[in-house]
Every structure is written in C-alpha cells, then in structure tokens.
Image (cartoon, rainbow, N blue to C red; front, side, top):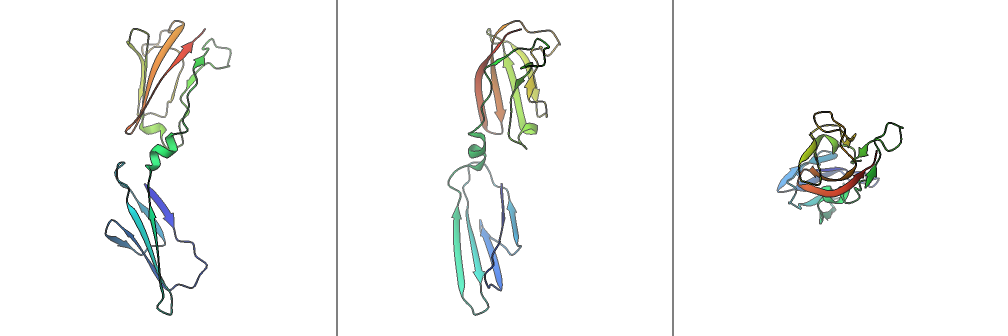
Length: 157
C-alpha cells in the first residue's frame, strides 16, 4: 500500500503521478499492490512556462516487512492474577491486529490457544476451552499476511 501527497511550494500548473502505466492527476495518491511487487512511481510536474520536472521513486523493500521488522514479543509471563505480566502480549503495529493469526502450542506440539483475524492479540495463559495452562515453555506462531514470527515464552504462575 502506498499513500503519498504532492506538497510543493513551487510554481507548477499541473502534475501527473505515473504508477504501473496508470496516470493519476489527483493531489493525493493511494494505491495497493501485491506484497512481492516493487513498483516505480513517477511524478511529473509541469510549470506555467512549459518546463517539465520528473522524479522517480522506487520502492526497493517491502513496506510491510519494513514495518514488521521491529516486532518483538516477550519471552515470559506470569498469569497469576496480580495484574503484572498476566498476559503474553503480542504487541503488533496499529492496523495489523485484525489480520494476525496467533497459535500457541505446548511442548508436545498440541495447539492450546488460537486467535484468528481478531483484535485479541494476547494470551492469558488459558486454553481455548478455558482451563489454566500449566507452567512451562510454550511455542507461538504469529502469522501476519505472508509474514510469520515464531518463538517461545515461559509461563510461570
């Protein structure tokens, strides 16, 4: 997804955004493209005296990967009801929560908790059927679009 706006104090009479062979003359530019595509965006401005200026912008990296590269999850939580670290928080960037799938597995590989496409991005140490999960190490998989994060967290009551 690209969201851009022409902000120019110069003297131009018109402009055109050129994206994937489409010409757009709106001041704001917004378009979506597949994750693996890296389009070249061209901005052409025309001044009143027939001068033309062109700027190319190439998106060299996947914007989503760039945003998600800073995601980190805790490795321990204590769901004992004291109000401190009672939840394993999968703190995701704003806008990514509703497209995240979270799975938590016990040490035998059994799924104990899952949340799909929900704003719930934390685990309270209870299984999907409501039972308290015992102390131990749990493994999680957080899938966001085509990105997958794997790790482990220790549950201590």
